Image (tube, helix red, strand yellow):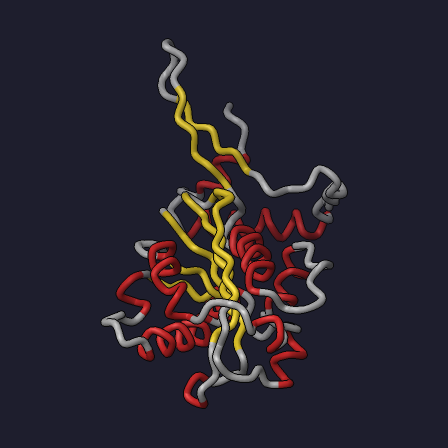
Length: 240
């Protein structure tokens, strides 16, 4: 499975008001593993960057003056993302801007859903953590992803951070390796990555006596209601 973690920076908040994309950052995942491939583009929006947006990303009109316009980079962008699933935090925002840029071109470009699938990590986070803050910064704190170098927003940096958050939020970065030694049956090895060697040891908290008693009583209730078929009780009971 090929996924592209994507982020954009813009001149403002609403493409319907003429705001444009000024930066695109893409990071590639294949089978939930970072490949090292990325796409990073700055774009001349052919209009002024609003003061509020400038405070967020710090990308000035002067910096963008000599950058290519969207029509010059669109083919490179479409080629990179085509056939992948886009992983975006607050996907409706970025997709609306991308679709607006594509629609403004004279060539027959289609909307983004024609080229890619889309997964919204903000919607995923709200479902997984209801009632909590689910901004990218909040998720970094929750999943212990280092974003200390993120003083200002930047499309590529945010895409790299989101890739780490997405992998942790959905079970970690893993790979399935099938091996055969010539004698045994094929062995399956699950390799979990993205855990720092400097991580402090996990606390081991033993159950209290009253908790053990409540646990045993609950298992007996399940045993009775299931007709003596409580799997957990069978596992905890040593063979005669």
